[in-house]
Length: 338
Image 1: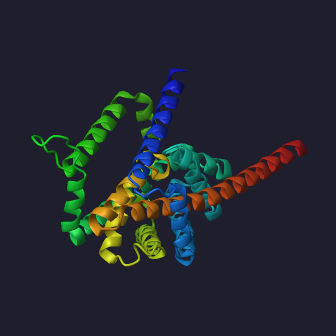
Image 2: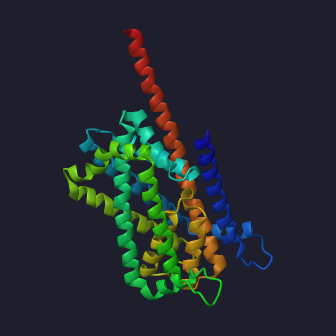
Image 3: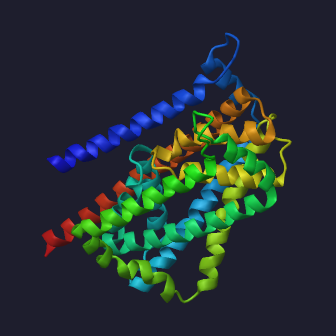
């Protein structure tokens, strides 16, 4: 009972933080009397739908490659799953993530278990490995963005100065290090104190170590680079879809992609809230895009991306359940015959 209350409290707190960040993002809009929803709708109408649909196509391709990579990671553990099952489970997990932050990581493993009888603990270990690889890719991208746009990013970090007084000025980059440091130490403390978590970690060790047992590590590296390459192209296409950002160059895409990736990594539903605060700040601070246009760009783009995830996720969930029911019926029929 206590665990359920804690879980519900964390969930409600997450939703509250998300709504607060969305409100803060919209509060700064100075539209001189124009309705905010009408302004956002006008931004959608002005967008070039060709680039948005092309971005959607690239997103689907990136998800297919991610499903291939996950399928590849599962093989050394003795679990040979189909690409269809891997993709359906992945997209179902993304759908759950929109409602429950990080809940999709477990739900995709459970969905795969129902489709292919792959042990949840083992597949979850491979998901952890995937995430570690993605973190490395993200860190490389952030390092590249600092290399290309150091002067601009210095301005952005200074814009994250949360100090209110003049006597003690704490720069934004120090806040970022402090937050990540506290989160890391808290995670270590939690893992050391929670025996159940330790047992689970021991259980999915095989899944986590599967990357070292891959027969074709080059293909795995190619998949990883391709996934992030498509993510980058999606960011570029979105910038091209809006007249206010179409003029931004290559280095700007790298920088904004890095900021957006960090925002999406926040434990909020689909990065909602954190993305709507950080990315407009980057656009206005670094590239002098008017605040109203920056906010509209982010709201329209994030809504389009979320809608795409919902549609594919719901379809994947329905197909998964149809397959699962069909398999259960076949097992039932076979049992009745025998």
